[in-house]
Amino acid sequence: MINRVEICGVNTSKLPVLSNEEKDELIKKIKNGDKKARQDFINGNLKLVLSVIKRFRCRNENADDLFQVGCVGLIKAIDNFDLSQNVQFSTYAVPMIVGEIRRYLRDNNPIRVSRSIRDLAYKALMVKDSIIKETQQEPTIDQIAKILNVDKEEIAFSLDAIQDPVSLQESVYGDSTDNIYIMDQISDKKNTDERWTDNIAISEAMKKLNEKEKMIINKRFFECRTQMEVAEEIGISQAQVSRLEKTAINHIKRFYK
Image (cartoon, rainbow, N blue to C red):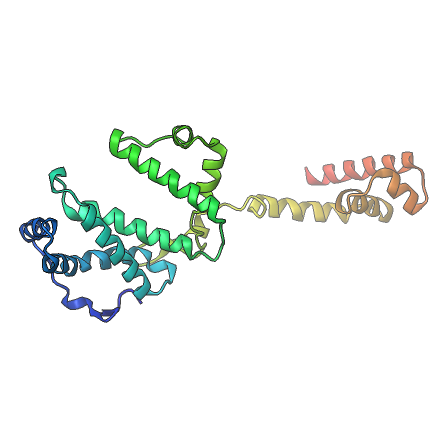
C-alpha cells in the first residue's frame, strides 16, 4: 500500500525535490513569515515524508494515515528548525517525522496503556532527548528518574509499556533469495532436538516397567501426587510406594544410559 503512486490525493511520482540552496532560501523566507515559501517548502519535502513511512510498511497501517501524521512531523520540524545549527534540514526532520509516527502508532495501539503511564513515558523521552542534545550521550534510567523525581522502576515500566508489539512474522533480513524472520531468531528451550530425544528415551524406558511401577511413576511425576496420596489411592503403604518408585527410577536410569 505504501508503494502506491497516489497517497492522500498526492501523486508521489511527481513530488518536487528542492536543492540545498533552495531549502536555505525558503527557510529564511519562512522565518520572515512568508506563507507561500512555507507551503513550497512543505511540498518540496513530501518525498522525505514518503521515504520515512516506508520504514513502517511491515505494520500494515493505512498509508494515507501515516503520510498525514508524517506531514505533521514535517511541519513541526520546519517550525523548530534553526539555521544557525549548521545541520541539514533532512537530518533534523527525519527523527521528528519518525517520532510523530511512533506516537501515533502507540496511541492507536490495540494494546491499551493507561494515560498516566503513557504521559510518564513521554516525559521520560523528552528528558532523554534533552540530555542527548546537551551532552551527546545516552542518559541512564537513574538520571531520568532523578530529573523527574520518580522511582527508576516506574520509568523503566512506562518505557516498556509503550513499546510497539512486534510480529514474529516480521522480516529482520532479506535478500533476493530468502527472508529471515524474528521467529527464526528466537530459541525454543522447551522444544529443542535434545529435549525431544530425551522424551522419546524416557517413553521407551517407561515401557520396560511393570504395571505397578508405571502407575506410580505416572501419578508421582506426571500427575504431581505425593507418595502419601498415591499410597492411599492404590491401597499400599507409603514405604512401599517409596520403594517401588526408587526401583522404577533405577530401571529408567539403566535404560536411559
